[in-house]
Length: 245
Image (cartoon, rainbow, N blue to C red; front, side, top):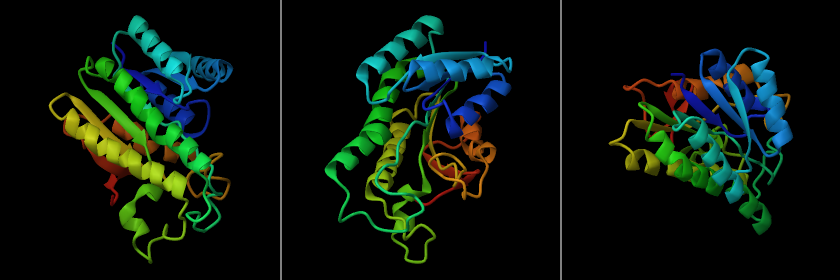
């Protein structure tokens, strides 16, 4: 039986490329987007390439969407092998502006960012976990960012030292903590949980000056989705290398 992977925020960018690469490797992909139309369009593009794809509407901050998605996966497949928590937002500052937003970032931006980047992925993962436990080799990949590294933000000579976008960076730091805690919680199950840093990638968020193509940006995520029984769990990974927390 084909492995089933659910990818959030799959209509474009790294999420779509992850769906494409895993689909070409024989996975059945469930793609989600915040609108049913976008999700349907994405699934249709994948199906046109002979990929087994299904579409669901999902706003990770919407409890009804999460419940409906759980019902769909349960009825259609009865299990879930891989969950990729890719959907996220960055709204507190332009990533190209080297600056510190701590003195000015609003409570509204902080709350919206954490809802999408932290609370939403946790709610979805907790809902889907009973289905992932039914897999013979469950994998959960939280798409994080090197900007969530406390160690690198504390080093004045770090390449990310000047990029202190409090809302976005803190949400990814928190997501990394979720990775660590969940990996420990399911350590006796055949489930591996990891945070992935895709890299600085040419996407709507990364911008046109990013050095990495989206195909390379998806590599870390795809590799973690396919990790064998000896693979890493509870890691913060970029292209096979561990990053400092």
